[in-house]
Image (cartoon, rainbow, N blue to C red; front, top):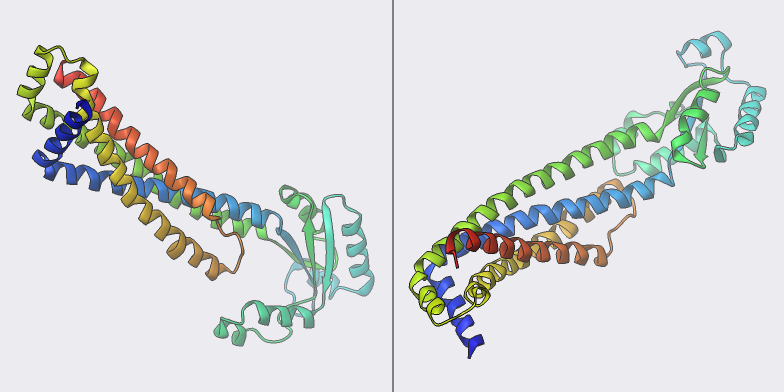
Length: 302
């Protein structure tokens, strides 16, 4: 009997404040969608960092007749002795995991394979534009400065390129997008809390006669507050369910597509997506319930 009464009170509250309830659900859904999207991007960035940290390498370009750096102009193209000495020194360093010598011919073929989908770039690069080079894989990605300083400026070395600088800029952009999404989500959640509180206050005011009668017949404070708390929790649950659709769409239509563009394999598992959805739904229910509870303590005065 009590359960039927509580359910009827919830239905009355939802029906009387239908417009406000829809507004609450919409605001919560948008807030949780942004929040969940931020969490999903954060997990994707973490996966990508782990993927690329294992593949960060240095590329040491050797001097050719066309090199314009001061070292190459003074010493000329790299000799066989200089090349062998550089390779030996690199292999002897504890920070280096492996060293691969790549001829100009091999570098040209690899360039064509990597950028086969960019015909304009391939056509603009002529054979011989890419010099001989060493590709150095590091034991620890954080130690690239040590290896770079050991070979930079040596006779036979034209320039040293490291992936870390490019990746720092790339991940800096992704981190900015992540924090922007989370900041907007937090603002939306704050707005949702205020809207939820206002909706519950109006619902309590419209049913003040019923709650007064319940209080006179000896109903406990919790029993009087329960329909309002459940009303807020249901709104949060529905908003979280709608937000989960956006989170799934973010995974399949944004993050997976980004991976196709950059050709790397650091796909988030379905478990990661479901965990973000679970956190978002739980947050929505808790947010609405807590906002309802605080509003009732202040305005219902039961």
